[in-house]
Length: 268
Image 1 (tube, helix red, strand yellow):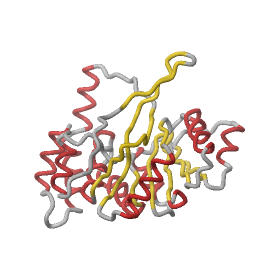
Image 2 (cartoon, helix red, strand yellow):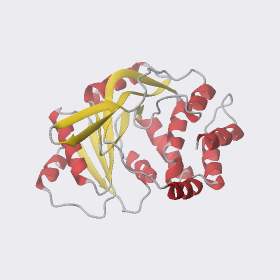
Image 3 (cartoon, rainbow, N blue to C red):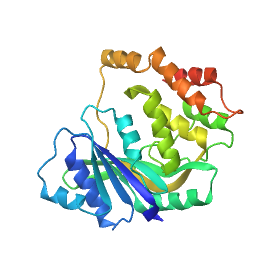
Image 4 (tube, rainbow, N blue to C red):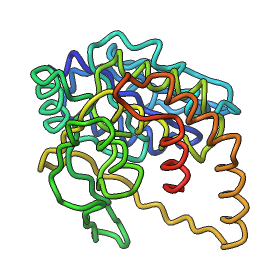
């Protein structure tokens, strides 16, 4: 089943992480295609990395270093030629058996737009001292049947998972990121918009399996800097653009534009 999957890896000036991730996948003799979306302003002279990139199932796409990452994903998705796709950050590890389970599930369940599992954080604080812990709730969830309920539970925070890094059908993946490129131009809504759109298109499955482990993010904002960033990222014009984009794809029995604007605003 994994030969029908493309793993899209986003990276920017972090070739050490990229090399580590490609090495991890190579240990599994992974049959998936790997599409690397790289917007770094340079490329290192690294024999080991070049050897990993020489695999005939790995493709490297280079982008301008000032491209917005959501737009990079949208452009990269045009190169997908497999039935299923999954997004993977360069400091994340996706477990091959888990993503294979998700591909098989989506193949048999057409009313689901995404499938994934449990996420963990991996820590290496001292030499030979490695541990992991749960990133989200271990509550197993299947998104509600009704579109309204799915979207509301995500935007009001009651849904413990989101489909950002879940396995999805490639036609939906391209649609989601193509629409994100049209209606999102900055960081603030770059996860909320595609996740909301995925949940508009279908249900989400969360398996009780080890699906992904990621590097902890230790970045901390000052309160003043965060307030300035928040007001800029979630300005009225950006919220209006996102609400307009989501409303275009709604079916007759889905949400109104006003509802989306109100709920997205309350989620910020």
